[in-house]
Length: 506
Image 1 (cartoon, helix red, strand yellow):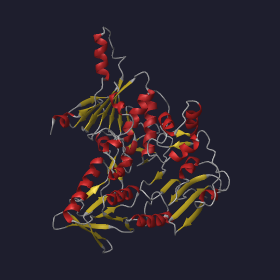
Image 2 (cartoon, helix red, strand yellow; image 1 turned 90 degrees about the horizontal axis):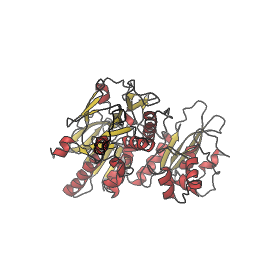
Image 3 (cartoon, one colour; image 1 turned 90 degrees about the vertical axis):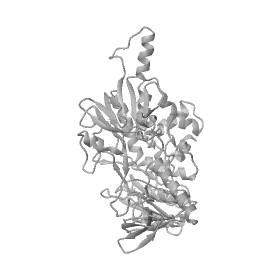
């Protein structure tokens, strides 16, 4: 192991020690009372990056210096866009935010050096390289790991998870190598028909592999869409060139004569010959450090936090997928970003609270348009479901309304999600005109114009309201989309809100 990996790779920055040295050389003194407090962030993912960014934006007095201890050997990157790696994007294109953040004099990023121990009594953390950091406040942003089912043979070569850049690089190398070795298209399977599983299937297809998605439940994306939407989605996925098997349980993975995965055996007696398998059944919070440190965990894992994202220890917070907030862990980036904003505010004496989980999702798969938000399964008492479907065209659209058919409670869009961006900010608000007009098929007329109030959230990833975008135009002189994105950060993450941002701009 080389020295950089043993000691951790540290981004260049002056840091508080450098500031004290410069002050000493100038004949001044920096007392301990004047020195910034030390925030240590465990984890170097998307939510950790947002936390550092939010704190630096707010901390104009330099009250905090920040050390981020990251397990991966690279700066935080856009994990949501992993699939784009297979369409020719360079991994560096996935980098998040302004790289200058990591060269701020009060920010230090230590890469490739995982935290192995937390001592809450001494308020220190220790890393794999032996580094010890004392903290005034600790934030756990360790995220989650791929859930791996106890299937016989799951540890065979050729079986992958789909979570990090290293995971997808290894998958790509295996598929490319197998294609050359076999002289034919690789036969792939994805176990798990949820959001991540379908994106993994898209990745395999982009690599030229045949692919079958295997789902234990009754339909695809069962968390986000109902049965009707799932059936429409199945047809779209088939048209995309991916086979689907639902209500199918994988019982065993068998090796081929080369010793790698070669066949899947199902509980119903069926079989599927394969050359590569991706397991994408979900995630589990990485809460082992917290557990070892004696922090309370939720019934299904995750570090229990309150509405301020604080644990029972006032000097320890948790954000993102490792945090158990409102009784659950939330495997989406937008709620994690909200937790980061709350934590940054609290560190500076604010009183922000977690606003609740925005669980809106949009499938990022070329040619397959799927989105959902709110109470997509109409579980609210008295909820009404308004559905328009065209099975031939593969379109299914549903709005969930209050019992008086006025207030929007949720929605599902499969095959045509053109109204998603405009309707999602109206969640919990009364719709103008006839709700059914929003479900009209393309080309049959325009839906009622939605006059978004200033406090309606347009960009959930970055918590940008409609009024903020309007102010960027009227008060800050932004005249195009690029300027609005720079000024407000709207549309700079997943990008699903960009159609609405453009509409407000014009």
